[in-house]
Length: 153
Image (tube, rainbow, N blue to C red):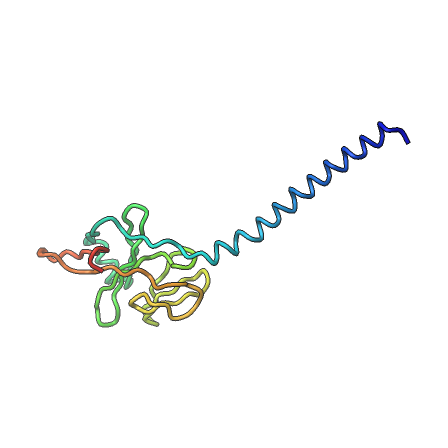
């Protein structure tokens, strides 16, 4: 065999080895990233200031027992229990950041993504969430408006 054909063969072999190496690295990254993302809890966050609920939002809470309000990029779930007490918790599950729901019939908060369950105070009952949902204080101002405040939780 000539030296020229052996050089071309070696060049092709290095190219194929390089492609296999890149493919292996890509596969390893796609397998490891979801595991790391699953194990790393989401950072704590809270709204910038008090949230004032509108009359329409209060009517929605009376009718549907809960509402999710937004302030900037934050979502807060405000809900009523059977004794008509108002609660407010972060609407993002501490596991993967999915939006949670209030189940009034079961008096609990539920995350549909991985079946995480929280009590009304946001403490983890079952499932993969690593920590409780952050709570927010709910109070009334002088005019009777409902305020949700992360600062006084």
